[in-house]
Image (cartoon, rainbow, N blue to C red; front, side):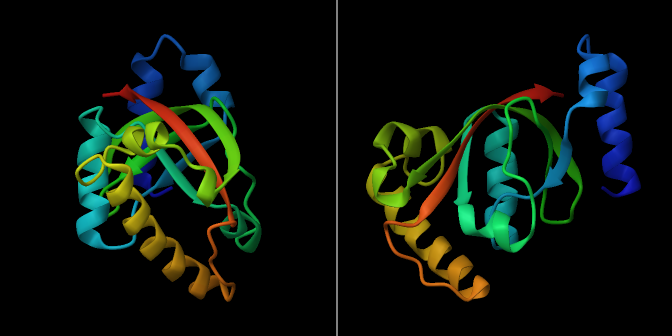
Length: 154
């Protein structure tokens, strides 16, 4: 985390009743999306409480040698300039195949027109790009990490 992101997180710790646990759990800073426009839109939707879920290729975690997300993890949500926007806590993390994602989960992502069709089309595009970057092929049987979260700050 940058110093500004860390200060933002410390403000949360200073005013949070969950102060002690917040200092002990895993904390990351992350932007959601692959273009500046999408990153800013996702940050806006998360901050407004509209976007309450996200997903990623499980293979991305392995390639980056990062642990899978765990319930209770805190994320400092960033905009396209890496400025902190809000903080969310992870309430659920599950693994499922792309072709098993439900319309209900897609709706929790809160993007586009909220339909499963929009979600499917845009996530195929997103994951094809991500898989190509990783040097793997994206298929609808690829495993995803589904995350549900709630905004806790500000």
